[in-house]
Image 1 (spheres, rainbow over the protein chains, first blue to last red):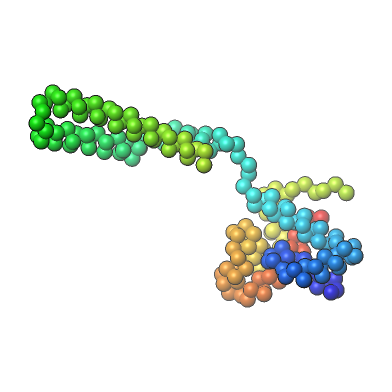
Image 2 (cartoon, each protein chain N blue to C red):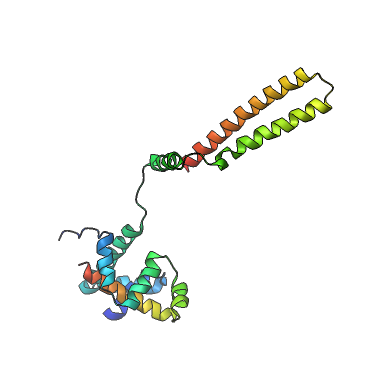
Length: 139
Length: 67
């Protein structure tokens, strides 16, 4: 292999995987040719710089959480944020009305059970939201 | 010899602007947009071998500029 062919192979190796036998011939040539060794080193340096340029910058683990908090703060509260709570309370209202109509219990008992159930479900829903937000921040 | 410092975005712009247009285009597509050789060839309407040889020429030129 002459120097021109070796240098073409070196360039090609940065674009696609080369056959092992070709790679071995290139390495054998480079180990005894200062010109091609310098050429290979220049190309490796170029590759490192390209990689450094294209790599995403390192971010602290808290960065994403801080950005999310900032976005939340800047955009205020949208109606879509309130939708799960609205659906929750509407569902509880429907269940309460059905309970009053269908259950063989007095209205005060049904209303007390419905209120307790609504509060309990809301606590569980809020806890689930917070767990999901925390899990997202760590991803 | 001390290693050259890593080029920043502005310096990369300068290096790339010194490449002839066809070479700059394949570098942008292959490295900066992470397209495959086949995709670049299809996008530019040229043979894959042409894209490879343009990348070779671009790499030689960029490596020389960064010396």
